[in-house]
Length: 369
Image (cartoon, rainbow, N blue to C red; front, side, top):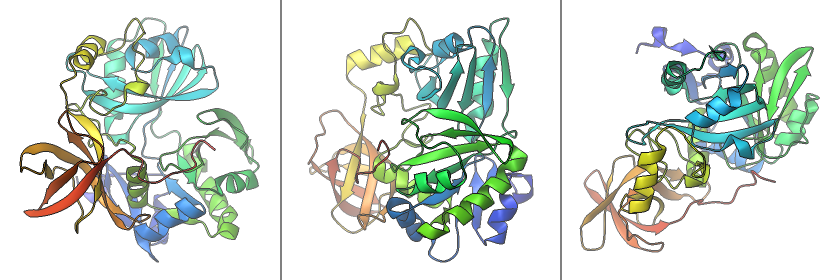
């Protein structure tokens, strides 16, 4: 995809003015990092103070009509009966035949008759298509991809920043409120993808630049920073959070990703339930683990992992240099029988890099505080 054909967020001009390094994310031209310190500086700002991210490329869709929540509950893995509006819930859209993950997404339950969905950018069209193919009469499914922007405010001082705008901050984790800023609607949700306390703001598309500018000004007393998607990736990897296309995919099921906590096994139905239940019972699939590098090197996606005897036992799904730990870390899939503390070797471009099997998170965040 050429630069000119990529879609642009409502904050594109802000990123260009700041000199951001831009790249393709799911067909959207988005910032990787900003000048003046890059990923490490931005990562540290979020862990220690506050940072804001433009994630407007994320999809948005609305299911409305009598029984909208029941319909979503029959499609996706998690159990919406556990959620009382206004609450958000992490869930997965799985393939009915294989159990592979089409996408992982957040569903905002506004009422029994309205659910607002936020899929990943590249997967929005496919999620909407699958839902539309099964949409009962009387329900409406609307793709709202470019009607809302999304700004994530993350870090220990995130509450102070959001409060400066007069927006609600006294929210339980994974709950949301519909508010106004300067007379314009903004959805405020107590969630994020960094492991730190944070909020995600959803203003209307055309009002997103004004909200961004206000946040930039509000975080100055706390030495906050605009942050690119490079820091978003290192932050989520330190927490062991799955990224679709890496820890979740059409070939990596919720069972393999240890995401069974987001599966309502007791529900009557959801896409892929039978095949996933059979896989869970068989206890044969590979499982997700973390790797803490003890040698010199940084594992990357698709690097082969071997045990002490040289036997291939797994593959890296995500790897990076941890800015917090200042050492390489990785998420991976390993054969059954792997255990915490096992010493393994990662083949990084033909070089053997020693690592120890561990359970994420690699660092402790304050997301639920």
